[in-house]
Length: 113
Image 1 (cartoon, rainbow, N blue to C red):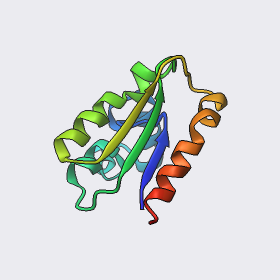
Image 2: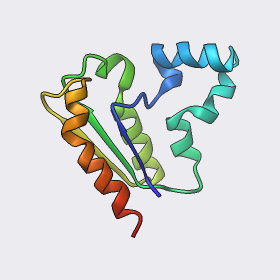
Image 3: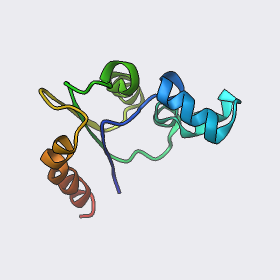
Image 4: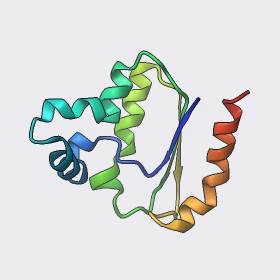
């Protein structure tokens, strides 16, 4: 078992997109949002699945919405296995995913053995 993601919103309780989505789906009680926030989950998890994240450094949403450095710090503090690939010159496009999807499939398959 493993986890992988492309350009994930890793701190939804701290960014506008996440706040908008969590408010709409979970209601105004911010304390209840923690059960769905990757930062909180990595801090409190008892099971540690290997995580692979690919992030384009030319992504227009990087600084305001995605903020992978927050997950990287939380994972390091929690002893969570993480491969964070920061890809120069890649944005938030289909081409970015198409360029690296094979890496994610290999990541998944390697954990089946």
